[in-house]
Figure 1 (cartoon, protein in one colour):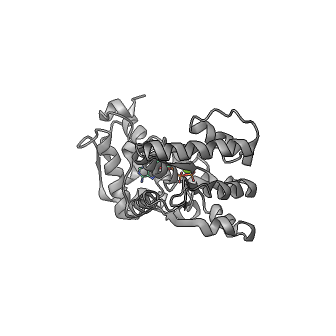
Figure 2 (cartoon, protein in one colour):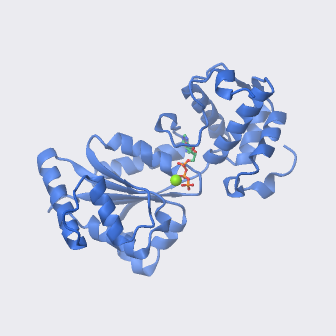
Figure 3 (cartoon, helix red, strand yellow):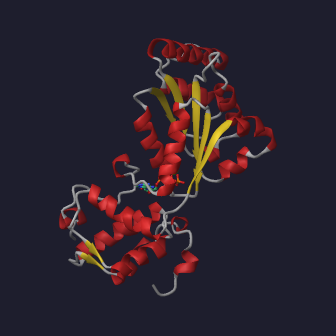
Length: 286
Ligand SMILES: Nc1ncnc2c1ncn2[C@@H]1O[C@H](COP(=O)(O)OP(=O)(O)OP(=O)(O)O)[C@@H](O)[C@H]1O
Ligand SMILES: [Mg+2]
């Protein structure tokens, strides 16, 4: 079986599923969200929410923001949202390299506060906590975020938060018992799937960034088919495109037509249907 990377001569596989910031495509929406959150953080506005449906690019957008911000801020990236409030405080301390000398949580919060004040004084550097999959956070942990977001000097917030999660996160934040945290959210951003022309640009952008310029062709209908099958959800596009490239290599084809797309799509079906949100609508002819 031929390997698509060698067959097409790509430097790397253009559609791997890892959120690789070097392959970040700025759709209108991704740009709006990244810019909004970035400038809010620079302006020290406090708490931010990035939400959106499954596979729309929340994690990759956060990684791009972290890359851009890490020169000027201390960054903690928390990927385990199932932590209880104490576990969360410990993870944040750990990410900032604060040795948890005090095992009691109040003491640890004091240590974090001290670290933040010192780093602001000595380096002029603020701190940001990104929490991914934040839709799973317990109410108590969200309440702890509110407490931590209160750490400030007389003129500056010392610790800012970016909560990243699926739309359930917004529902959670609208609950009465979390209204104090909800009130602190300075900017709520929502990612959405790509439209047809963005899907086209996304595919070519990732191919170009992977060293594939001029090495593969698509007929126009095939891009339309890819859009129709994936409804512009980037993760669904990646899964489908990965299969298209493998199949094309197997069949020795460098031009992608919609027959090939259809055949590759059948191979994607072992993936959970949630990656193809409109599956029921798209069984018809392409
Ligand atoms: N703007 C983009 N540019 C390049 N790749 C993207 C973009 N948006 C999404 N992707 C790709 O789509 C896939 C899914 O993206 P990501 O993991 O960021 O989605 P998510 O919204 O965090 O999903 P989940 O809700 O499951 O956590 C990844 O492979 C990612 O690289
Ligand atoms: Mg994610």
